[in-house]
Amino acid sequence: MSKKPKALAVLQGRCPQCRKGKLFPFAAYNLSKFTKINDTCSSCGVKFEREPRFFDGAMYISYALSVGLFLVSAFIIYMFFHPVSENVYMVAIISEVVLLYPLMFRYSRIFYLYIFGGLKYGENKK
Image (cartoon, rainbow, N blue to C red; front, side, top):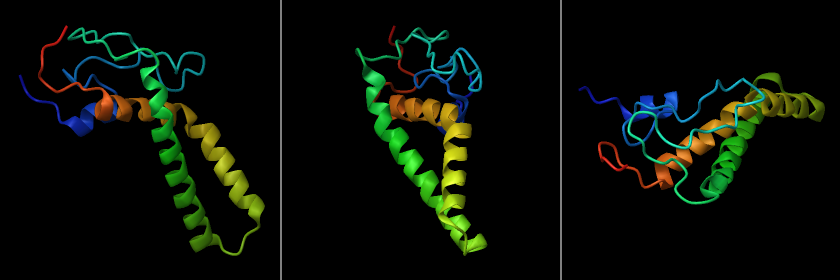
């Protein structure tokens, strides 16, 4: 049994304990179901939501990801297209929010589970 690298498991949205089971049952851009997360891992059976409302803390990670994205976007616009009106910045940032919201939502939950979920690779908790 080969060990899947942690970075690859995070990018693919896999279980932190076995790195095989999917965290999300539907595609990110299935807009009616992208927020649905599996209750348990289909491979090892571990419960993903560690306590009631566990994933509420992921909003802080989402905020940090959003701010980072906005700063990088503003820097790129300023460096390559300066001078431009404030409307260009607003359109760029609003477009990013609309287009990337499903991914930001998911990755904030994935990062939160990996950092604060208390699940270690290879442990056999059911």
